[in-house]
Image (cartoon, rainbow, N blue to C red; front, side, top):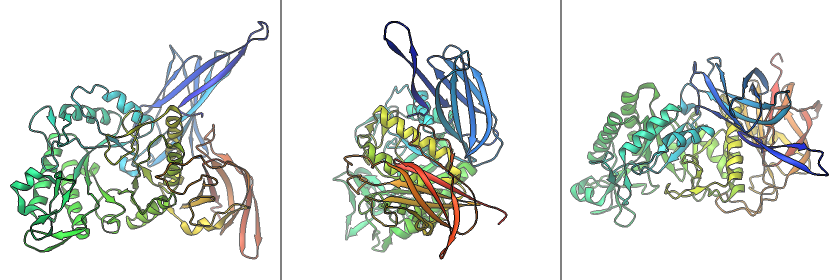
Length: 566
């Protein structure tokens, strides 16, 4: 797989009997930041095991923007470029490693983007290790930047759910883990060096049993004097109604955190239940109504502390109550996916609906898949990214979220790291036709047909899923291959990946003359956009174009550009 880390073999044949010797050439290219703000210089660090010079071609979609060059000295090269202050915009970078005679030794690629704020394209990740003495903050953020992770949720960093900042250093959290606020602060500072936002985990209504005993009338009750509990003797659910004692207390804790740390906003969690209860006066409390009201108060507080860069996120567990919280003052719609949304095709439907409810806000999906299920990981990311969404899964070096308790993450094998990096590069490189400046167009998915292959169905297997998005003067059709995968559920291990398809005859119904057609795939060794020859004709139902798609492994994206003078 040719990507940021490419392992290429340069075969050197020596006339010594019949021996052939292979010399391994390695090349790695890393952007120095997770994203760039308008006016910032892009710096690409290249390391190579051999070679004399690197050449880099920077592309926007299928257009070549510029070419850079730099010598390799002691195995390293540095490339710098000042993009135009256009945002948001994603770019691809294609690297060639050359020897002293100009012979190509190896190739690789990466991507970067220019954003006004990270939340425009929130490639949200996680951190969950805050032990005293943690000394790999810089390495952690360098690793995150490889994948363009530009926001990190600091999960369970707090002293207590009701008392976020610790009384001493180090401190022990409610689960008995020894943590350090100094470690937290070093990680925040290192994140900011890479343009990575730091978001503190909080819970909207969780409090310790000891705190509840001090404030029994602050709780949310199921009946009579019995409060709701979360876990056995773990947490008590408090009443977060704005103006209630608990809500006032928690907002005060948010203010303290923002005053005493450099966190960039507030991440607010809930547990999916209860949905309603009664306060200490016996009055009914509907959390579907309370949540957006509390979010709006929290957003006003965070904006007062952090200005235009403030961000507030809220977890819609099991997609509830997304219809209420998506239009609130959250900066992105964050959904933790659980039953009944277990089918692969539930993922794009969740993203599409949340985008609609949020008026085009970014959508972040938290769907926990262990990295030892590589086919699940790859297909889930294809479906989420093709829908214009983002997937919370990366952050700790080499790790992938595998459990709702984030410290129980899984470690990615090298091949999973490589394919995942390829998909994140692709997401950033083509974000202007996958997400930014586009809207979902589910009605257009049925316009594309593949001869001999089922496409127009809600099934999550033995079909090619078509995900359509519309932008100014163009449409994007992502084809996700679900043929032969042996299962329909993203949270159950697949025995194998999809059956590769080749030379697919495609018909696409269009409403206007097509100027050009191109395609790209994160599964190809070369992620560059390639032109697609096509024919246009009319039939009884209108205008259509026909073309042959060379290949479909997991995900191939097709972009249709229309004549603007029609």
